[in-house]
Image (cartoon, rainbow, N blue to C red):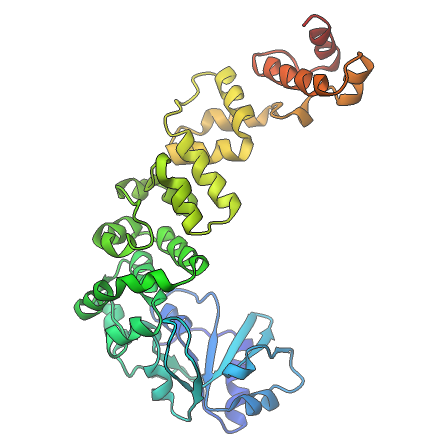
Length: 377
């Protein structure tokens, strides 16, 4: 396997080796490189102990916040790189984080603690691949398989259950039989994981090109954290946007409850609810109907709704080219001008709302015309 390693990354590997330590790229960057995809970020594992790593990179731009757990982050022109000492994990009493970590001089022991074989490969600066658990074969066969005992891996960190499904949805992989069986036995452990972590993994799953198939095949597992799930086929025809796709598998009646349980961010939640509230909305047949809908939803929501419904976007693009009046801020008359006409308090807001509605009905958005409309109201 020959891949290009950015010079700033290879320099880190070389610096550790020159100091007498082993150093390897590890995890997702090796997996992605083997699959022919440019890695989004790089992680390094090394035999150097934390204090030794710190000494090797004395003078470099570093972040030491993870040093107690063996990780030093070095800032490079290609982004931050986490450099972590070979380690073994202690017990996971909370099914999420190790109670303690133990540093080791063995790359094999470090790789053995990792979640899946496809993430347990390492590569040195000369591009020599270390694949002790069959990661390459599983990638070639499109399989997600736990490293070692699958049941133990999921007991250690229950979030790995959703991570496995995220990889399946992203790459179109199947779960190896023992991994899937262990997942099904341990699925209730997902209830012990923080909602924010569940939400992040679920979004990653939903973005995958194979999200529909993964959700359908593993409905009972995902149902532990999202029992409101319904049909999945519509996902295939939607952009890889988590909010759009989640709206497609929820119902209006129970979406609010599901989003609250997931602790979804407010913007995300509002988008999902907006889509479900407008799922029966018909596509505007003319510019006047389009203008009314745009005022009601706002420009961004309107575009999202068009994409979600699969409507023809050409009329929408033409509409926006005209810089339409979509909000009170866009009106050619402001509050001061209305006060000059004798309006006060809530009457100003009522007048602005009335004028916005009139503009949507075809009234030209021109100051004198709007003033006349108020006077003749």
